[in-house]
Image (tube, rainbow, N blue to C red; front, side):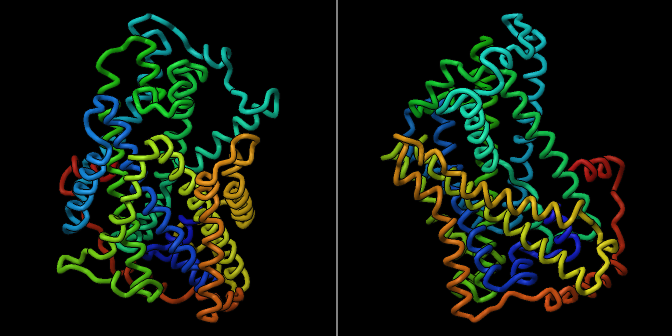
Length: 458
């Protein structure tokens, strides 16, 4: 909701980075930009590692390094070429994600009512035995709370969407109309799919399933890595596990492709503003920031770590790094919204005139800021449990919590920046041009009825 209000008011590229710089402090925006770059760039090797895991469901004949090289080639082809190639590939790959989530929800609904080869009408059986809350490390209420907290940390890694929508604001047509609609749609879809997805996993497979628990304890990279595949195996459903893993594969490729694009454009934007080496702003004749893309490809070679450390371990490390970075990104957005709201009050700017106005401000922003910042520190708590200490896990869990203030204070002292007072915050620059654009804008009518329906859906 916060990024939706800010971006709808002033649609620009990399909005949460630019707004942090504009409404808080230039150094704050630079730190936010590098945090987001590291976050996005780290997800590229994550998806490469995930692809290795998925392929091993079918065969272990392909070496891990071979899979990584293939993914490097695919992402390079799609991102070193004109952006139209990226857009076209992403559009069609995204269909796989939609088919996957809708298909798995339907699978759960049908099979829980007895539509399976075993004719087992299992319903909500696994909520009673072994139960909907699993104990973790401790027993009793504390153990169930630690189990819930562990799941919440994993959810913090998985939840994303509005920040990616915001990245397109500077290039959107009629953004003050389109962006609020897009944010509302993403909010509804995320809420529905994430909640329904979590619900379906709890319904379809018990938490103490032998195949599932063995996979997580041993770091096995086979079908048991997916609870849905475990559920299909339990019900003796053939073929479907292969289809599900095929769709998961296309989803991983699509996600990795998006992360290469977002991370390269983020560091490219920082270079244009003079906050990163100038060489990263170089572009090809087609407008592709090829040096920035090359940098992301180099970073993605972290995926080769799985050759020696194992796929499951590398996935765990990257998840820890990305979770902390994403939570910091959300806290940056929340704090920026707090400063924007305060500036509006002091300067007498009426938020009721905004194209989109989020609810319960500034209380919602304060709540989000405290929660996300707290979760960033809590995310690596398992490493402090007796017998669980691991230097790599600690390093990946808390690196970004240290890096963000280092970048912030380092840039602040170097450039002598200051935190803007509410009355000093710029709420004007760029707004008049957007107002004029809105007055002059003439919407293009759909070509036909099918085109109208297509535009509403996508």
